[in-house]
Amino acid sequence: RFPQLAKSIAGKTVAVVGGGSVAMDCCESAARLGARDVYLVYRRSYAQMPAEPDERQEALALGVHFLLLNQPKGYLADQGRLAGLKLVRTRLGEPDAADASGRRRPVDVPGSEWELPADVVIEAIGNKADEALRWSPDVKTNREALILVEEKTGQTAVKGIYAGGDIVRGPALVVEAVQDGKVAAQAIAAALS
Image 1 (cartoon, one colour):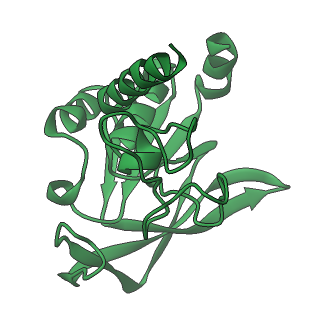
Image 2: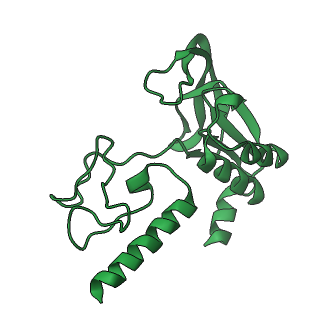
């Protein structure tokens, strides 16, 4: 499976949209799979990136080009095939009321549109629970559509249904999801015995 992925990346120009850990992983993977150039497109500044500092440094060490304060506006196509991204430069405005961290909101700079040629574009722009998703009529969710569980067991409001990881916590670390799985597995084993 990876050899096929390497063939689709090797020698290509790759653009990764986002500034978090997943975006850094995508950039690093593309670089290691032999991409000719890898561009990270992020609408805020380097200091505002949610990725950890060591992840950012690793991507830079692999030769990833950071295109900061740039916002994608669409895709470029050539005869029905992806040809790149339409971008606009941004500046930092007032603190974003919708952002719990208080980061400043990116504001488009009028007249600064430009195009980035790319063979592959990867959107790594975060994840949210799908509010339209219906797990079961009785599985309870919160405002963000995350599943509510009993903390010590991972059991939902429905007997026999357990949940963990990002669908419970929101975007978090893999080790936390693994721990949720272990907690739920112990609870399931106890319930079955």
